[in-house]
Image 1 (cartoon, one colour):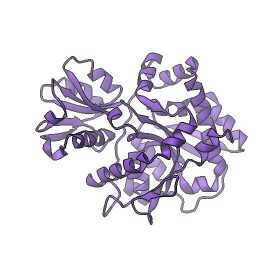
Image 2 (cartoon, helix red, strand yellow):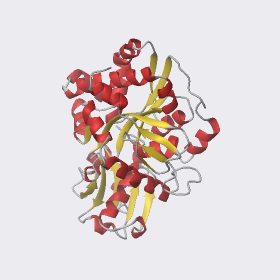
Image 3 (spheres, rainbow, N blue to C red):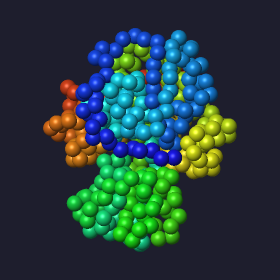
Length: 352
């Protein structure tokens, strides 16, 4: 299951050029985009099983769940107003729609990577031994972010490396086998395959920075505010499927595995390195934790350092991020990314 989790440099221009509707209105039809990744497979199952239709009908609305094969393209289309919501990471939400001025709310905090992303060295060594070596990864991706966090943990910076070489995830396994590649940063299932090489040494993975690479379902804030039943139906359907997954329903998990191009064991292996929030109360607690604002500050600083926080962003504080307790990080006068536990709490309270 490949997920092209990287930043589209043209996305801000796209959002500014096409733009979401300036004023959201009450409506009954909604479209949501998603792409293949272990933590987002429930969206495909929701659509195929009829669970989404059931919850939408409960609230007198229609919600179409659309699979987009290119992850970044799905975010671009959401940013341009073609969709009311999209599956995205916290980093990509901050940089693309929110950085482009599209006010966006994290409706569902679904999971965080807990080992799916890793820094891998060829041969023996530790993080400090990366100094002076080239590192292959998908530039401006969560892999790039993971590398920055790994280097920072041992007092190194990207400038201490020989170079960072942009490498497609499709080429990563083959690249690791070549003589000139000394280290890579990538995500599952590539990580698992590369680590089968006896010469591969895992130096750092996302379990070392738990809760920082977060997978979300984000929606247009104005649309959500004008149509709360949209939020209720989405969250109700999601947690119905989370209950089935938590119970280990083999039919449900097999359907997700097959839809993602693997088998049941392969899908379970990836779930093992993904911290899924099956219980909405756990998602609420995570979203309300004091660690989340610190994470978002780190992410904003990384994006600003790479020049992709938003067109003409003057500082890492350019985009304001709001949290459930009313606090913000970044520019409080430019809040375009919101973590809202309202609907997840309703699910936890059995109020949907």
